[in-house]
Length: 168
Length: 200
Image (cartoon, rainbow over all chains, first blue to last red):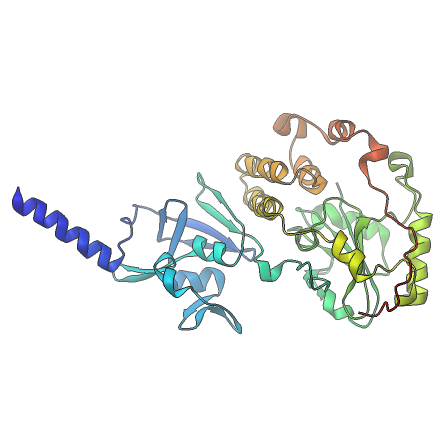
């Protein structure tokens, strides 16, 4: 009995010190839709509404990478609060894991989740949305009927009437 | 620049573009990106953007002809007149809004509206990957979070049987809103008072 209690206490302190994550559920797979790119991820950990993916899957699914200065994509970097780093980055089973839902909250990014199909949809971050104070028209790039892409910024120097319509 | 907000892309928007044979740029927006970026809630919606890429008139109902006048009660002539005035006079046009007016009219970041965009996006993704039944609850959630968005209702209804899957139709919803003559809010085309300095 005493050795059993000792082992449990020892394991508790080990887990706390290395920030244990719940055990990887068998067959845990997710579809991540990020910036409208779809990535199938075979190793995930879901824990109380949080989505942990490996740092290599972070790069693969979002094109963001974990760097010393923060979570970065090219010149765009979001610092991770030092006091809460454990909410974003952890090591478990020999791998580095990143909490994509916590990151979404950090960058004011909406997340929708379909549990049955294990699909996570990440919407536009604050830096991607219309900012009230700037009055700068948000840029976008979309295709025409021939598949050729056009950006709103291509029309700089001209007045633009941006008109949305639909077949419905 | 005309942008089609059509989840089915060329399949649904293409025939209309082909028939119109436009001289202007006509783009296809399967993911309703422009509506998300500009907080648009219906079609047709127009935004005026000047040569510097600045918004000078934000989202408003923008009929450029009278084909829906019987339904909406809106005459396109005043809007077209204002548009021509801006094309001719630029920043000196009385229909260009000043910064104070623009800040007042541009939508704030309502968390429910923002989350609605993600739910709608998830619904679109599930629909396009062959999971219409799973998409419907997310379309409904988008509609619940952003009840002002007619885009979320009308696009979702168009992708399935509205009566069967949503218990309603576009016509029913317009009637609930007070009828077709109040369905669209007419643009406010009262010429603005010229501020001392319109340049921003």
